Image (cartoon, rainbow, N blue to C red; front, side, top):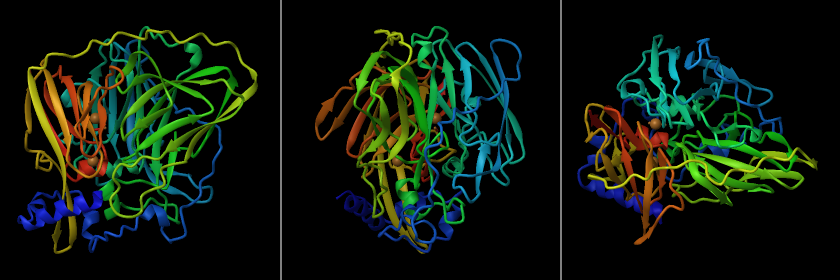
Length: 508
Ligand code: C2O
Ligand code: CU
Ligand code: CU
């Protein structure tokens, strides 16, 4: 069993002199002080609710809300000038109680940012979270390292800073933004700080008649009083999984569509740690894009695996009248301990397809755009992901390591050169899946290997996050074009916080 493997690794660490203990990063983890010990039986709070009577019910079936767009103050073409303020706010998830959250411009998810290839972006960030540093990281976007909201560049509580960057030609894609402060990313994100950033192409091959809708999944756990409970040991180990998967902040909202309609949907997994294996019952899905934009050509799909931080762009064809539902299928990602969340059979979104056909839709083109495959790497690197566990006087502590080390902000793990193609081999020797993410560029996955079996991905795609299943090795090609320090990490944000992160310093 996976759990036994994890414990064996932990025990070995204890016997070899509590190496993991010394390696644990305790900063920013005040919640661990109040943990008297770890209960391996695992009473995941999300199964019980705060008072032990099950999760707080949320209203369902409201019309799907479009995310409000971030207002552009520039008044001139080619420039996006705006302000994003992170601050405490109040949300009404359950009908009868308030939930204190963190929000960008008062909303969670944050406002949708939309820009075009070639645009200049200047966003003033105001951190109004009391007593906490924050940053804004532009997940997946090719922005300069010093504009990318690294933990090394914190914005103090009460301070402002401007993030400025140009969106290069060819950068159209489904990106997002979220905080990345040292030791506090997981909590700031689950409390509500995340938003979508869509870069549109100048010449978009996808018919405008399909619309373009961001569908952002977040995860919510509410205590009986409406508050969001702190992370437990089970959350730190597995990553926080809540009671409810929300779509644009709503539970199972409804979308009215005409029979025969095609809709372009950009699906975002903005949860801390929820693995979403998705199917659309009653409608046909075609994948047209991934994290970093369109594929070369559309690919029909019966199901889609979206690990934390991944995105996929779909065209969904609604050809049958009645309800079509976006649901989750079972996926075993190596849950530790008891309390594995119910992540199969959830209905995330319901489309109501009309009886009478709507206007005829133009077909999806057979070619979307060319993707030049990266080739002939001049450097190859190997990153081994492991988990460790150790006892200390206050209880059990966990470490999530890359090449045997937990994250250290003062340490450069890899020195690379801008413009050079590299082969990265991500080896998961741990008992849980870990979605690997790299800042600053998009990569191409070329190979998966598991149990001695090598397979190639079914299509060429630009990605910034890829799940590396337990026991799996994923090989990818990448090229950083811009100099400066970049983070790479597991995008289960609790694992990132517990050390599963490193720095690659790209030389000009
Ligand atoms: Cu989405 Cu380093 O993060
Ligand atoms: Cu990122
Ligand atoms: Cu992980």
